[in-house]
Amino acid sequence: MDTNTTISTFPNNTWGDLWKLDRPLDFEAFLKLDLLAAKRNEMQTIATTCIFNVGGSVSVLAST
Image 1: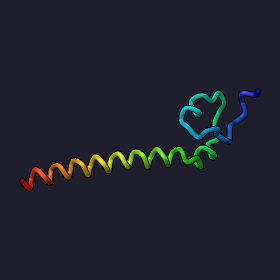
Image 2 (image 1 turned 45 degrees about the vertical axis):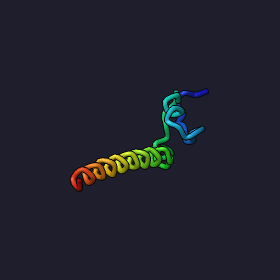
Image 3 (image 1 turned 180 degrees about the horizontal axis):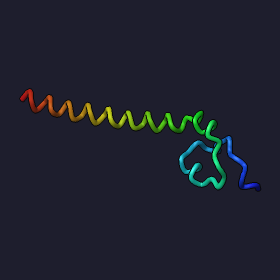
Image 4 (image 1 turned 90 degrees about the horizontal axis):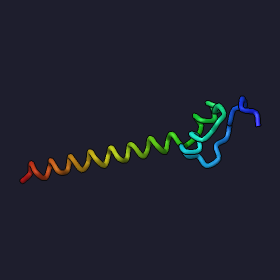
């Protein structure tokens, strides 16, 4: 297999698959991949949950 060819498809769309690749990535294909959007949504969900939990706790303490 030629190691200078670029990969334009990703087998399972996971970060682990990207780390295991021994060939350069096709940047255009990588940008179209939903993997980045999924990670961004996961981080937004975590941040939003933390903000609501802390804000709710402060509100309860202030109300008492």
